Amino acid sequence: MTRLYKDMVTLSGRGLTVLDHPLIRHKMALLRDTATSSRDFKQLVGEIAALMTYEVTRDLPTEPVEVVTPLETTRGERIARKIALVPILRAGLGMVEGIVQLIPNARVGHIGLYRDHSTLQPVSYYFKVPMPVADHWFFVLDPMLATGGSASEAMSELKRAGARHLALLCIVAAPEGVAAFTSAHPDVPIFAAALDRELNEHGYILPGLGDAGDRLFGTK
Ligand code: PRP
Ligand code: URA
Image (cartoon, rainbow, N blue to C red; front, side):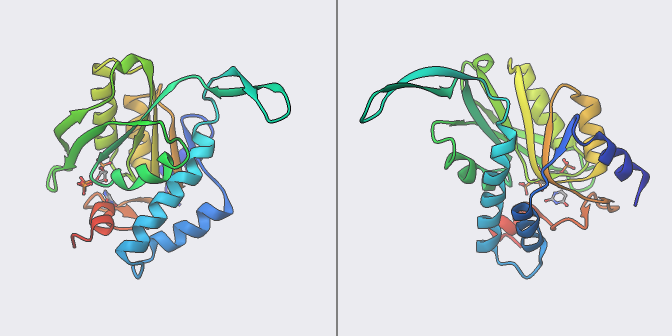
């Protein structure tokens, strides 16, 4: 066990929440499996994102509403905030559908970033999010938090645009990425389905699941 991994386990429950549920652990094992087809990989990413939504939305404020049942009038609750899902292109797209099934009126923005293969630095190429930015609660989606460069850049772009409520949802987080992200954005919570051991020399997460974008879209 690496030292950084141990530090991150300690961070769990504060900046980092690792979602621990038998269904998530079961689906994670299938997702990591190199024999899993692109079709199944896509489905699993969506299902894991949907399972994560339950915990990630726990603090959303609600407001009272009056509901007329077939028998009488009663009080109910409804979500009191506008929700925006922002996948980081490309791989974040795989998480959108599973969450939209649970939050059908969520709006969807897009942030285009890719990681330069030699420098591992994020390169920004697209930004479009729902307006007015300050009115939305933003859930930024990216299956992989590796060095943390892409997620940190996405949050900085959202903050520069005026976003105030932000959270990051990733499927696999590396300790190095959690450390870099929380140091750049200590105010933004991270939710992960798994915390892995470390990065290899090419910036890939170990044990990880490989290149999430390529596996989702069948590009390799
Ligand atoms: C992957 C992944 C993240 C990023 C994580 O995207 O989906 O966006 O790398 O790495 P980092 O934490 O070190 O920044 P990639 O750049 O491969 O682009 P793609 O989704 O278009 O394949
Ligand atoms: N991006 C991926 O898709 N996988 C990794 O392991 C690291 C970055």
